[in-house]
Every structure is written in C-alpha cells, then in structure tokens.
Length: 212
Image 1 (cartoon, rainbow, N blue to C red):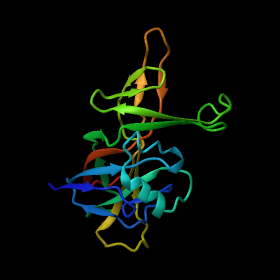
Image 2: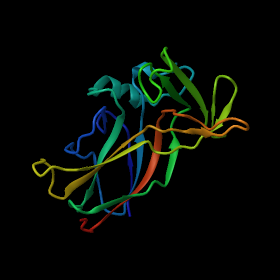
Image 3: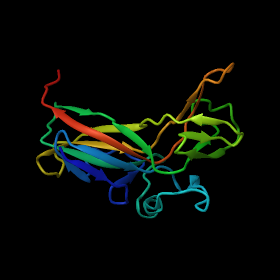
Image 4: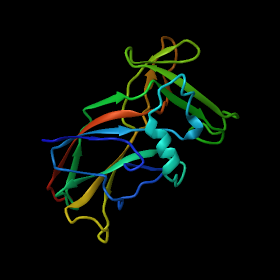
C-alpha cells in the first residue's frame, strides 16, 4: 500500500463545477491511502490575514483558476488504476484535520433553508481553537468541533474521454465542513454550518462487482 499526499494548488483544484472528464491530477492503485488537502472560500469571505492563518495557495487559486459558477473549490480528480464501469468504489474517511484557525458562516437573504427570515447579509468569521477543538463564537460561546466531509463526488468517465485506458473512475473532493452541532441545556437543538480548509485521509479500493 502506498500513501499519497495530494496538495491543493491551482494545478490540482477546480472551482465551482463537477466534471467527470477532467484529467486526473493523481492516479493510485486500489488499496492506496491518500491525504487530500482542501481549501474553501472566495475572496469575499477571506478574513484579515494579520489575524488568521490563510493557506497561501488559496490566493493562488483565486488568481489563476476560473470560477465557473458560485460553488466550492474542489481538489481532484483522483483516478483508480484498473477500475472499470460497473465496479464498486469503496472510500473510507480515516481522519479529518483542520488546516487553519478560522471558518466562516454566511447568511444571504433569499437563499438557503430560511430564505425569507433574514433580510441582511451577514458574514461571520469564527476563530477555531485546534488544541481544544472548539469554535469561539463572538458572543462568548465555545462550541465543540465535529468535523466531517461536506462533498465527495464519484464520476464515471465518458467513453470518448481522452485519458489513459486504465483511468476510468475518478474521485473529486471538496473542503467544506459543517463543524458545529450542540444541544444546549434547556434549548432546542441548533446547527451552524462553518466552512474551512482541511486535510482528509482516504483509503480507496475498487471491487470488481457487477451491479444490476
């Protein structure tokens, strides 16, 4: 088994779209492990760089990568050598580690789950304490962090794709984490989505099983 480390960069990221026919930025064998670096956020959500750590490649992606539509910055695709259409792709998430000391939460009028409840745009930068694994909200509340992966996409290459013949399955991943969940004593359950960058370790296997 080989362990790969896929760094986020303008060469390994694409912004705002899913496309199965993208040329893979990494090709692995079945059973290999991959640490995938992810980044998140457009120029409009970046905090003061004098107060927070911002992955330097985030600025490079903003400058060099075209943003197709409003959406996430994705790292990948990753191809599995020898996989074929009809095979099962098994991906386990072993660990998710924070890469920065901040996340952001945005309220946009006429968008999201409650489009009519909020009439002003609000951007909130949330300091993250990686040692205590809490998010520090501005009104003094510390919420436990519970990172999980936000978006992971499997894409089957089209028959006319110009790729090596062994590369037929790709994996795309994105660094958007919803990290806060808590039930305060005497309060209803609350959920706060916070987007940030992370390292994620993935073992990838393909199984030669024909599906109906």
